[in-house]
Length: 236
Ligand SMILES: [Zn+2]
Ligand SMILES: [Zn+2]
Ligand SMILES: [Zn+2]
Ligand SMILES: [Zn+2]
Image 1: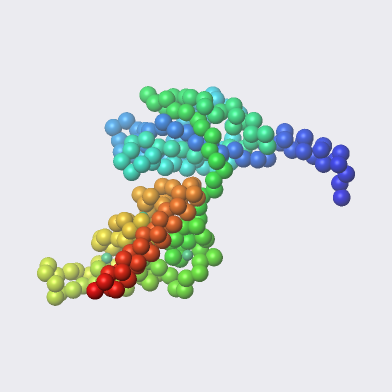
Image 2: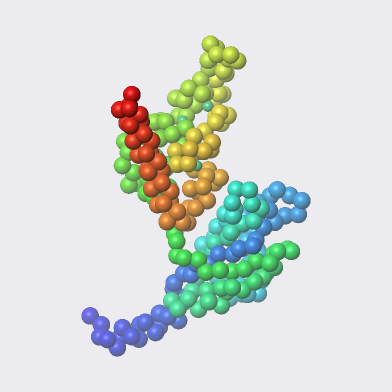
């Protein structure tokens, strides 16, 4: 076991080494940065932007920048970056509240909480647990939330099967082609795949609190609708 002096020496040493990570976000950055183009901002774009700005001169990224649209209809992005830092967070402190230009936009660096991405299960597509710790038997489809594997959607889902009896008759979805029908997100019930980046759950994938709150709301609504069904039944 080390004596107290050794431990102190170790801590002093550690605080100088770039061993820890700091979490920052950049706001005010355009989601479509290319003139006259609907091309989205990419991690590589952000890396180039950072390289061109001297405030990032001695900064190295700990992972690729992550980009999220501020809201579905917004044309602005929020960019999360993780940087290597010393334990005192010295590098982050130098950057927080600094502004720099991206085209005609003035962007600002803000501190972000250390919020790792909320995991999404690739078995049942719920957020908050990993695929390995999923407790449901079988699998749910990422497209329609029915009990089949996503890759079997075409074979198992009625929407992709031919039906001559309806008007107009429905054709079978061709093999290898994506299901052109509407989807049902198992989380928000929206018309997109459960792992889509337009899903509000995806957009809040770094905000565990939001997820917890949202699932609590969903549970609440579900129990209310069950209660009203029960009440409705007893009133008859
Ligand atoms: Zn699961
Ligand atoms: Zn399906
Ligand atoms: Zn279909
Ligand atoms: Zn959704």
